[in-house]
Image (spheres, rainbow, N blue to C red):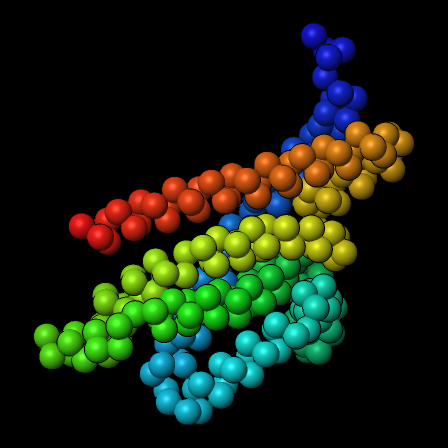
Length: 231
């Protein structure tokens, strides 16, 4: 039975791949939460704070959509810490901050995409619903939370799912700052075992499986959400 298991999944190699999968999932989940929180904040600023809020959000979105994600990752991991006070740099040096800065970089970047998806969803909501909610006694933020956003997210669900898959794939960029996620682990196993095809075929299959699971889960959520909202 042991002979049927590929060499790259045995012993230390298998443990390294397993740890890489765990780091990839941890980064995907944490960055997704940050991205969604950032998207909701950007939408609130754009709708609540008038012209200056819209300009600020537009600048934020433009920056993150036009600068390569890899460059943003490098800025957060190398440039930002270098600009901090020396004592803070020393303190950060005592910890493994790869996951932290990768989460910040990917989360803030993907938040710009999520906010545009939700913004498009808001455009699909009937414009008179905010006024109707206000006449029922809801505040503007209350109307946004209870009336507009639930419908907007429903309309934006396909785009949000696609960008969630993109976020999952972009976690591979974190290998450039030393985070031992799946791509990093695959490269380490390949360099030690010299089984190039097997290693990267496995990584390809795992990324494909992850993307398919996200799309299937998103499709289920989309159908479930549509069923609940249309009752």
